[in-house]
Image (cartoon, one colour):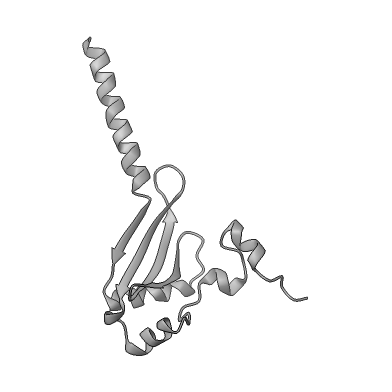
Length: 128
């Protein structure tokens, strides 16, 4: 193989590897301390056109939030799922979570807008 072809193949391999890394880096999961989680959860009340934080539920004695913002490279969103163990949250909050109550209201829920195409059919029409 000539030198030019080897260089082109090397560049192609690097570009392919970067594309895979960027694509796979779209969603992350990160543990927060209880206090960090509560601070992040406060963001669910803010309506923002650039980023969002949503309470997404509980499981395995953990609470979960989703944080997203537009990707700086390519199209799409970057999403991080934050979690914290119940043991690091106040006991009264853990009781609410275990009973199925939503201690945080997502901004999209407050304005009655669907958050995804599938939500359109499940939301009640506004009263006139």
